[in-house]
Image 1 (tube, rainbow, N blue to C red):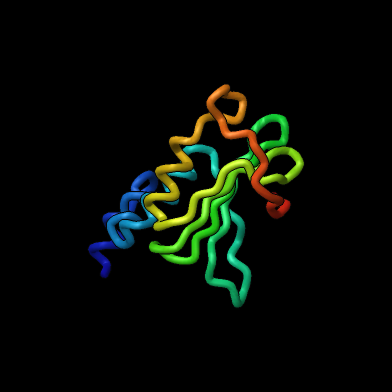
Image 2 (cartoon, helix red, strand yellow):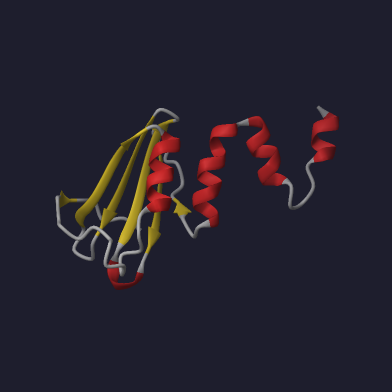
Amino acid sequence: MEDIVNLIVPGDIDAAIVAAYPELQHLLDLRHGGWRFLPIEPGRSQIDGFRKWPAGWTDAIRIKDSGDALGLRLDGEHAITWEYAGALAEVVQELLLLPQPSSRLAPRLARGKGPKIG
């Protein structure tokens, strides 16, 4: 164990985490893209994260486990304009491919109401 601890130096923390838990690379990809994650509340096993955009747009993710995640895009009125459910890797990939809200290719049609996040 001491050998592993000695290998972890500042700047290598992410690499050590991914080596131990490869599926966490997807969360690190989001974090490097400006995403923030909420603290895990006692009694809840899910991870919630979000990215705020100008004009009130928010991208969000809820992760229950590596095979069960949900991605959302909410407009300034908290209406859901995009939704994708699937495995963590799939949801993160789709979120990272989603055009910026200001893009003419971004989804805009409201599909329902979402939670107020952040």
